[in-house]
Image (cartoon, rainbow, N blue to C red; front, side, top):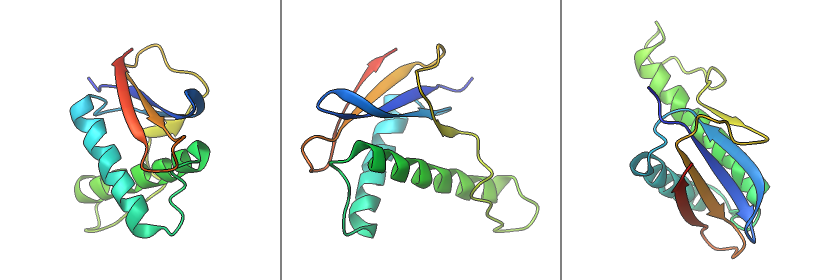
Length: 122
């Protein structure tokens, strides 16, 4: 069974955007992924939006969808290297946390620097 989680992008402790992740929700899956995501944001953008939780959450959904598309291209599609970036179900935007999540992550964006991530069991 998949380990589901919610990733809250917060500003001064208030949730501004809420992202659902369907699998690999354990800290040893999410924390390294968030670190890789932050590094890609720093590498690819002039304006990281680390201080703007809604924009950063949107960037995370796009990045996560790309990660899922690459995995699916390896294992799912008949044509070698075929990538379908919109053919994903593993990440989404939500209004409230589902009842079946195992962890909640808080990505605190109020400093303007790389966000601080904390987590707790749901």
